[in-house]
Image (cartoon, rainbow, N blue to C red; front, side, top):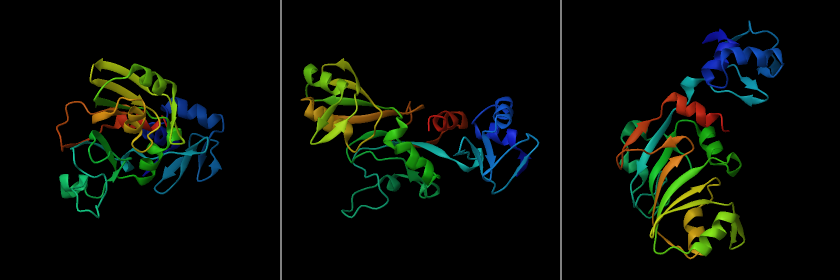
Length: 232
């Protein structure tokens, strides 16, 4: 690779080439730690480009996949109890991908996989505030409890941010969270007297599960990856 820095920025998805040139003029772009003063600056393989200190990744280094996790599978590479893992459902070419966060043994739906460990870490940080949406089947609906969850509650000394909760019918909720703490939806709904019977994730940020079949994996297109990266 040997390209002008403004083109590199544009191809990373961080900004258009014209905006990139303005960022360079404003002194907000660095190359290997040094402020770039001219758009006629070239980026080579191994160079580090940053905007306001945030390092950019070339498009061709990041791959992201949507996987429809089946029920009764562990989100781990190996389970000491011998239970089936997500990697048992994947063909050999996907075995080295890293999972983005976890879905518990009984939870189904959208799980992201990537070849970029740092991206996986950033996507799951509570500070990233990336929304995840679930369909929760509950044994009963307690509106008073749900209102508490909508305001944010503390369970066993752990604070949970407010959740967006819509009632679909008398046993089904659509729940949107932005924190991603372990078993967050199950813990909060149980504390609010609406215990979960089934939990299914349908979206993670701009990535939608859509009609992807159970146990199948699908590569996410670059424009969706760019939209996700811009939220970090």
